[in-house]
Length: 122
Ligand SMILES: [Zn+2]
Image (tube, rainbow, N blue to C red; front, side):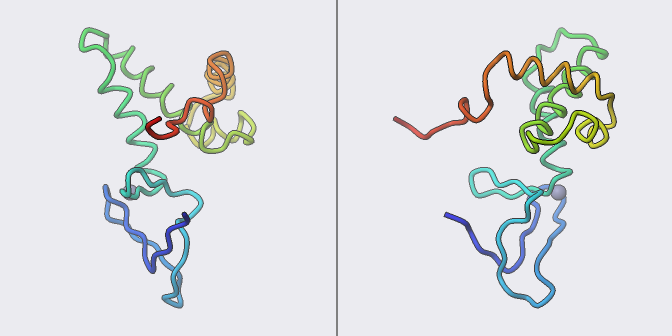
């Protein structure tokens, strides 16, 4: 089901988007919707790194937490644009293409993200 709204509002930063003519439109390509809650791209990225940080053990160092957040952001961006070259993902995450290649390699080793997506309750 492709939801149609006149305007989409980010649940986190309250920015909203819509067509200039006021007609209904689908969710913008860069936006995400989880459980009926909609986020703009920058908030979806921030949530990805915050969730990773929250789920990391309290005992890890500050530097490790930064790495966890950065890795989660890269993984999010790869999942969002799997066809994008490492350099493009790196620019979006303000990191190096090498860092993206490392995370992409780990994700590939773990299996395609799409296959791990929740499929609903069996
Ligand atoms: Zn937002």
